[in-house]
Length: 115
Image 1 (cartoon, one colour):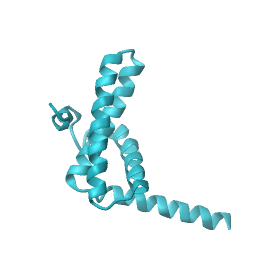
Image 2 (cartoon, one colour):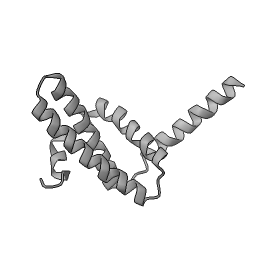
Image 3 (cartoon, helix red, strand yellow):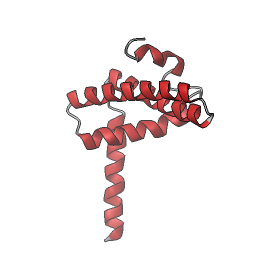
Image 4 (spheres, one colour):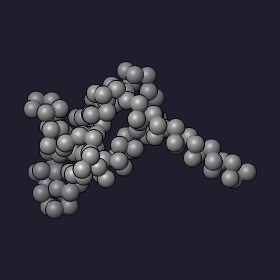
């Protein structure tokens, strides 16, 4: 019984990860850049640069909110949106700065409102 339940959980989580790849181009870029700014804020805070950390955290929050609104408009549930956000956070940390990253993090500030 436990194996069946575990299998269902794994299948469900694979389905959510697959949904993350089916986003609109705008929601995809907003989530990717929002996650990148999240990780940059963490690095800045860890380095003791609170002003930079606050800036990146604000940018991350702005892009995440806009990405969530785009996904809500696409009919995604709050549970799906949370899973998508988690998936992006996990993928972006490995992609940032690597060859073949989905986006160039240096182009992400152009998405931030008021930039």
